[in-house]
Length: 119
Image 1 (tube, rainbow, N blue to C red):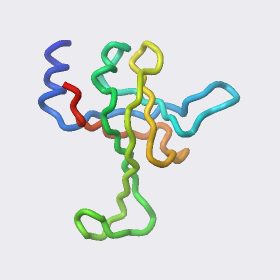
Image 2 (cartoon, rainbow, N blue to C red):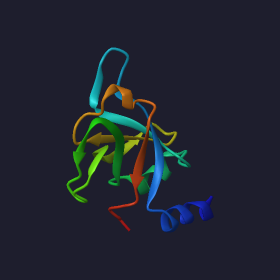
Image 3 (cartoon, rainbow, N blue to C red):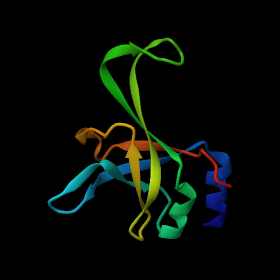
């Protein structure tokens, strides 16, 4: 396990994750906090490396818009967020995004960026 974690840290710029749900109980849910399951993370101690890391939910819009960085027309859009803390003891994390994620995002994948570094 130690070798795979080092390979993840130094060999990749991002890690894959899935959106499982919104935070909350049976009757009340908080749509501003999303629960993520990061690949290869299975304990609360392993989630500490990802605290504060940036998260990108990439989706395709209906109309194309000009990208602010590349100045080209594209249909891809991004909602940025940040991993806040662990959720439970099985490797789930809580993340908050700049704007709340749409309901179709549940079950989709997000990219966990390996920055900013806390090392």
